[in-house]
Length: 392
Length: 194
Image (tube, rainbow over all chains, first blue to last red; front, side):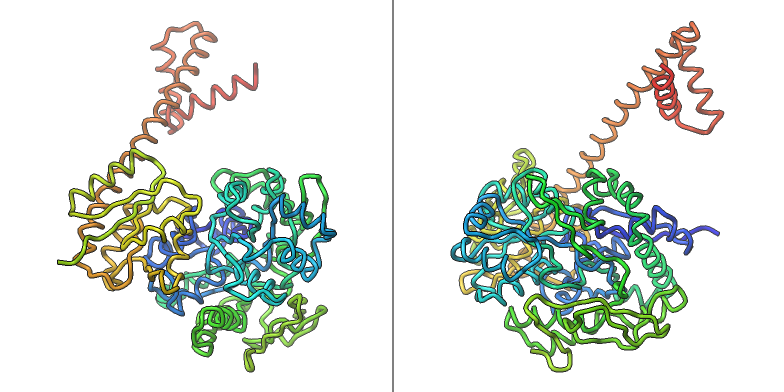
């Protein structure tokens, strides 16, 4: 049987692992798929490649499909979220100058307490701190606005959030263009390695379970190709489960480090996978539980409430209609396809399509078809709770 | 007579930038500026306040322009990628050629088309040059490896250059591989055995 070729795009980041592993470890082949992977130079280009049909599937920022459905930015196609490809994985990095000021003011860089870290940052950063993010529509931007907004900065106007592609963050920081940035693995570790910055917080300290990247396809394609959609989802889901296993971390790091993919030392990638992060050029190490998660706690399940929350937050910030934005978010997160296509793979299928976001403090059993689903803590640092039925 | 359209070209390579500007000049009377510095790109662009921004699709700095589409302050004008969303053909052609265009929303199609046509043609040429350059480079590399392999064979078996090449070619044909692959394998093996 000859395999069906499927073109998929990715940005060279650790959280592209499920797509890359699906190809390299044979999960795609198992489904009779030949995955043809294309490395994209920017999120905008990846989005356009997907929207205009140069590729069938993409590793995508979780916020982008919702923003597109709201009519914000770029291409006109409807993009569906088949599954969440990774949860968490971001880190906040501050410039050496700012870190020194924060230390002098008594901040201990515990890499855990978002309230402390945020207050210390606001105290020394002056008016409108300039903070880099990889893309305007990203979990990075969402985390930043939520974090500093909850600590009293007026958002969005009290913050100068600038888009800087991760490979240029270091240069922008060295040139004094930005005081801090929020990026995904491995770019935080690279900035530490080259000495331009220090890590202040992992994204998990702000929100414990944030959908970071998703597996995205054109809505029309998923409709026209239900069988390919199903095989793609199964391959990527199995690859994500494999990627998440500790025993495979060395292999995953080696595969990702190749020049076709991330083209950086495997050791740097392994740090993110294991959550053992070096936070400063003095070699201080912090262990972060669930720094990046591919599988546990039904990580791949695209809760409609996650889409609704993204829509709600975007609308609140940009002054748009919140109900319409939440509806857009719900529409593109396809719990229905997940349920339909992953039923006999061993994937946990939650009984509900929505949940309260931010309501879980300790691992909690939840209704699912197998009865074995444990949801993991998903709290926000400030106790914010998003109830999709009564949003605030 | 509508006012002249202003175009900003984002391009760090000076020669390429000049070629793009030439092509655009040939397409009409425009007010063209080039930005060659990607630090603070969005800020520079809003200072120019252009009608159209052209940028290489392979440049990571493209993402910096996305926030322009978000800027909706009274002085900043909304920017959208491609004026006419119904014209997918033009958009696709541009993406395939490797150019992306950001256009102020509401600009008329007939005013924007000549600009994009000129840019697309120019970028096609760039792409062809890029492929040619890569092919040449690869050929040069392969040639070097083959020369080294020939040298090894000449020394080990006491034969002349033509005989050495014939031997490589025969091995390649027998195994259904490229001469350069066989040569590379030989050079690697010799390195290990040395």
